[in-house]
Image (cartoon, rainbow, N blue to C red; front, side, top):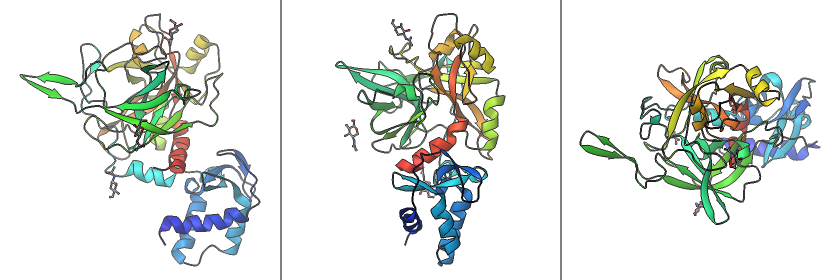
Length: 374
Ligand SMILES: *[C@@H]1O[C@H](CO)[C@@H](O)[C@H](O)[C@H]1NC(C)=O
Ligand SMILES: *[C@@H]1O[C@H](CO)[C@@H](O)[C@H](O)[C@H]1NC(C)=O
Ligand SMILES: *[C@@H]1O[C@H](CO)[C@@H](O)[C@H](O)[C@H]1NC(C)=O
């Protein structure tokens, strides 16, 4: 029996036998040993995953004691995946998804060129993770938010771009540069180089963060599962996420980020071509003052001052920085933030913007991807 099915068979026995007190994903709980923890799928829980693998390897199955432990630790089943109360110090990023993100042929965030021209226009195909979200309403089709490609099947964006708009949001555009032209080309000497045509892909699932608060705009993060997987090409590639502790710490210690986008908001796009601006990090207190609200650790405060160009990001688009990914010497582009609030006031004296801090949500991202299929 393949490994996956073997484990699933185990878990079914365990879960079916349990008097499952239904908790929700990531709810606080106590393990049978009395440790505080969270309700997690087994592949996000280091000790449980190891015990299951050991049992599988030995061919003996689980010891009655451990089967009993799991029965008491079961906290629910979501999308046919058994969840267990996992001690806080055992919670790990989902092992299946991490295997993908760490595989040597997963070429995320590859930086072709950092150069910008005409002020702020990025080079053709140099930000291949940029996605545009297309909405249909009153017979009109428009791009009203941005996002990023993070695997061949998932788009990362803000929850406010999806919440209540599931009937209107219908397509993702990848590989775009100049919205108004069919083919995007650039002169190189006497020759013209063109990017391959854009890819428009349908959406299969809208996955908002379970704790998204549309009034306070917190946990403003969502995934879109595409209805088919895309093939990576020169102009369509994923961005990296801050999956290691080192990268997570970097989110707080960087002084500058890049915002890339077409200035796409609920009112449409403000730029025809893809632009990039450099924006400085600010203390959270600067955003607290500007917006008269608490700015949480799950948010970042960036931009403001004279930087009129901070308005060029797309709502739901990325805040990114080149960083060392895993143990390589080459830098790759990592998405540290998602445009959430207040970053779209072009032309006004610009206030800093509030971004969703991606690092604390990598657990949610990997668990959600694992649950809905890579
Ligand atoms: C990477 O390689 C593995 C096997 O080595 C393969 O299964 C997987 O499809 C490849 N992934 C990509 C993104 O090419
Ligand atoms: C994906 O969605 C698009 C747009 O809604 C649709 O045209 C296409 O047929 C769908 N593809 C698959 C494989 O379901
Ligand atoms: C969109 O347009 C409306 C009406 O002009 C304006 O009140 C609103 O602030 C605009 N929103 C953004 C995000 O620019």
